[in-house]
Length: 369
Image (cartoon, rainbow, N blue to C red):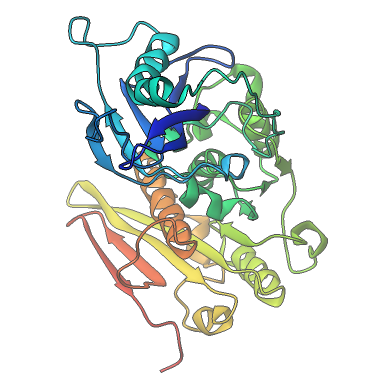
């Protein structure tokens, strides 16, 4: 919430105009509650009539990037002043009235300034993809970082165990569009390695249809196609800026790789291999990144299986939900590093996680030796 037209005195007792900014915590689409007793302020340090800084405004210099709709408000500091007896404000009205009295009182007395302008800013139509306001991002003060995803169109190819978790994480990321592709039906075993509820009416439907239904009340820009992709499906990926390949057949992976590389679409491929070892499960998780510049070079390294082995017909495909989720976590974290959301100390294009020793190793040079 932004309250403009807040008068205050500067060091020379001259009249200045600032703005109060405070966080809203949405309970639902209509009700809000307070995050805490603090506020942010766009302006310099407010002063008393005698030219001294107003006391009891703890906090200090800080920055908070706001949305484009509030581009005229530049947060410079935070203030903390809570009621002595109650230790909290009853509601937002009491909170803002208290701070306005403290900050604007001297300016009102000396210059006759009036903070009650009743000026309202025209409602700005939100371009958010979320059907609920993203107060998580604003509370964490990372709105500027989340904005790095606003132009992304993501393809998730394969909605098995890992792909389902990749989708779940991306749904909560403000990318413009998510396209999913999977021809398989959703059966009981899928429910044991996918996020969210199980509605018995989902069983037998395509995975693309099931996951569209699960998330359609949360965001826009989500579309599922019950189909397999191969190197002929250029129309399906037109406009895609990044892809996640989450398939377990080498032959399918090979065709998808050819398609993505030919279209210069960067992508991440995930893989999991588990087996029984001395009575327990062990194995590795893999995340491999194929950039638009070095995709073919990484493909030629043979880091991901691109053919079907005869043994695959008789091999049990062991997948466990927490490992599927962790594989998806590594993939999405890597994608967000590429976008500058997460810090990246070393640009690893290939990551392997060993279950037995809980260690991750990586390769950081995708160029030809």
